[in-house]
Image (cartoon, rainbow, N blue to C red):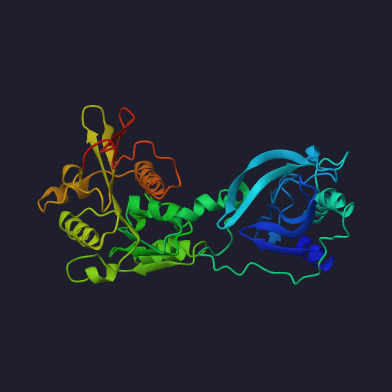
Length: 390
C-alpha cells in the first residue's frame, strides 16, 4: 500500500502538493505550554508513477517550535530555524532532523512521518487528550500543471517558490534555428503556461547538427515544419507548446498576440524591426539574440561572438547600439556565417539565464541589458547596467 494511503487509512490528515507530503493537525506544546497544531512536510518525489524512498530523514514544520510539557524546546530534533516559502503559498518555520537510534534511514514515508508525529505529539498528550488522527478525507493535489509529469527537480532542491516566479502565462519564441531550439529546450523545463513557437522553416538534416536531442532518419525524411517537429518532441514534457508554422511579417503580426515575454531569434533585419516595434508598442519585455562565427583563413580556426540583449518597457534605448535592425545586404552575409551547436547552445543559455534574472529566479547584481561572449578570449562583457542612464 502506498505510504499516502497508509497514513490516510490510519486517520492522519494528509495531502500531496508540489511534490511534498503534508501531514496536518499534529498536536504540539508551545513555549507557553499551550497545545496547538502544526503541519509536518517532507519531499514526496515521484518517478514515472512510482514514489521514490525518502531522500533524507529531515522534515519541515509550520507553527511554533515544539516543546516538552514544561515548555522547554525539544532540542533533539532541531536542525534549521527561519521562515521560508517552501512552495508557492506554503511557508515553513523550522526544519527538523531526527531518526530512531540504530536506524540509518527511514524505509518509507510512512515510517518517517509517524516517527516525527510520535516525538512531537507525545509531549502534547502529556497535557491534553489530543491526536493527529482525525480521520479526515484525503485531499489529492488537483492543481493543473503545465508539465506532463511533475517537476521533481525543483521539489528535490526545495526551490518550488523560486521556480514559480517563472510561471508566466505566455512566452513567445520567435525563430527556431540553432539558438531558438536550445532556448525551447530550457523553456520546456520551466512552469511557463504556454510557449508559442513561430517559424516558417522546415526541419532538415543540417538543422539536426545544431539542435538539442537526436533526430531519427525517419523524422528528417518527413521534412516537418520546425515548429511541429519541436512541439512534438517537447510535448512529452510540457503541455502548453503551441506551434505557429509561419514567419512573422507585416501581414500576420497579429498572430503574435500579447505574450508576457518574448525571445527574438531571427536573422532578418526587417522582421526584427517589425517585431521589436510591435513588442515595444504592447509593452512586452523581450530578449534578442545574435551570433557570428567566421573562419580565419590563415589559421583555419573559428573566431566570433554571441550576444544577448534585453529590452524592457523601462529601458530600450540601447537596442539601436547593439542590435542590427536596418534593412540591407548584411542579412545575406549573416546567413552565411558559420554556426556550431555549442555556440548556439551557449547563446541560448545566456539568454535564458538573463530572462531568469529579469524574473527574479537568479540574483542579478548589475542588471545588465546586453551580454557579449567572445569565443577567442573567452570572455563575457556586460553592458548597460543599472548604474547607467537609459
